[in-house]
Amino acid sequence: MNPGPTVFAQVMAGLNDMELARAAARHPMPRASRSLGAYDHFAAMVFAQLTARESLRGIEACLRGRPAAYRMGIRGRVTRTNLAYANAHRDWRVFADVAAVLMRRAQRLYAGVPSELGLEADRFALDATVIELSLALCPWARWQQAQASVKLNVLLDVRTDLPVFASLDAGQRHEVAALDQIPVYPGSYYVMDRGYLDFARLHRLHAAGAFFVTRLKSHIRFYVAASRPVDATTGLRCDQTIRLNSPTGRQGYPDALRRVSFVDPDTKQALVFLTNQFELAALMIALIYRRRWAIELFFRWIKLHLRLRGFFSTSPNGVRVQLWTALCAYPTHHG
Image (cartoon, rainbow, N blue to C red):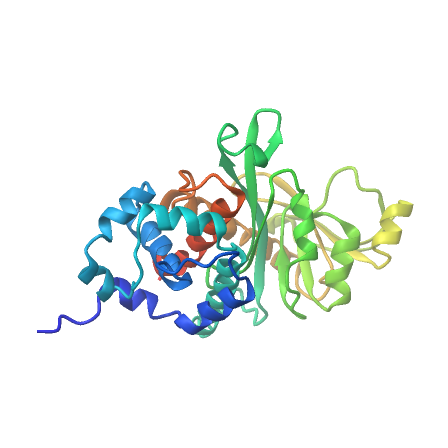
């Protein structure tokens, strides 16, 4: 009797092996592994994420039975030696390309999810998280005197809680540089914290027809060009049109900005928002920013459920391979 495809094979059916083959062809290995192809390598790493394997030897032990591995779609020899070689030598960009394919596919699958707040436009939250590494094992990732890490940048669709863009940077690279990499969709909203307050980069979003909502730092110099009345019972304190005062600020962002001051009724925290959106009600700006919390929950979830603490490899390539395959496994958990 044919028991049918395994659950893992059904999960992997979401990715066509030809798509992975094309990604592998764009980034070939110096010396290809004959016994562990790109698809089998990817499948083994995703299997490790879904089953919380602790080591390469643990992956090998679980997949040692050839009939079971074959039914799961794995045709190559998954051994500790083969996995170690593949992690060290198969370009991590292969799996970054696969992650991009899966992100686009997931967005299409969840396209029917209703929007919140009555807004038809897409809303994205941008943030970064630090993935800590052992300095003794990964000296190449040193970013402070006694710390090693890489930085994961994510642009999250807050409607679906799915990433639409991700990148990996050195730990010492400031997260604001991610604004140079993210895709910009006209009419969409980009929500971010004060760490992304770079006026020249924000003006790029503005010039492309996108909206941003962030928080204003206290030392920023500006003058008030216009002020509108607000309902203080909602927590609003002011709604102003401002222009930047400093030469650097005016050069980076020569257009008008909107400043909205708000006191959260629950926490009593005073927040000052900065945006280029002048049409929405001031309270709506505060509600849009509140959904930025979705990306904090995303980072917390992946660190709790995916294998982002213990690494199977200590090489720069191996660490990135594991991080990208972890992101590929996320939609499976999410669903």
